[in-house]
Image 1 (tube, rainbow, N blue to C red):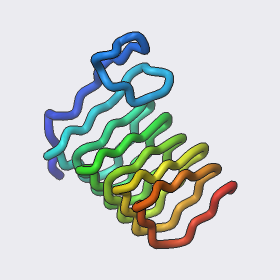
Image 2 (tube, rainbow, N blue to C red):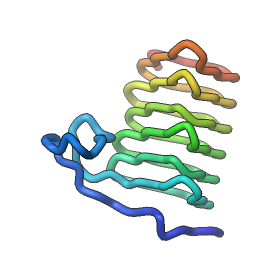
Image 3 (cartoon, one colour):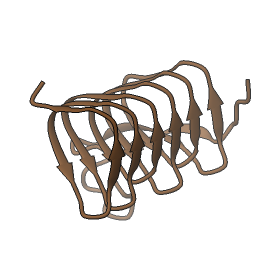
Image 4 (cartoon, helix red, strand yellow):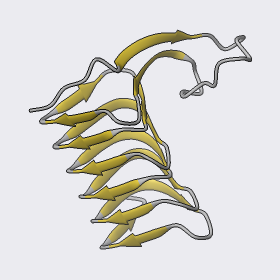
Amino acid sequence: SQYSTKIFYKMIKKTDTKTPTVGKEGGLTCVIAEGTVIEGKFTCSENVRLDGKIIGEIKVEKRLVMGESGVIDGKISTENAVIKGKIKGNIHTLDTLHLQNTANIDGNIVSNKMIVDEGAKYFGDCKVGA
């Protein structure tokens, strides 16, 4: 397995306008930088900002925000997700999945609510309201 030291937690405050927030509520955010590769099971009880690559099962208890350079090859489970990157695997969100214009999903989707921007692509079964 490859692990990188580019994974870190940082405190994000609602009132801090210079730092982009990941979660609507602020709080702790795990940032996985571009160039980072994680293999195996990844679990986080806070928000996650992904610009690197994860190969394996991912569980994020709050919000997953995936940048354009983000890549996931595996099963995803999260409360909310905003996706701009590439996913090969199934994704399950308890609340809202937002596929932005550069999102590319190859797998099945299960979500309570879903927003799909023009240009986003997904291939597989999609169950919304489930």
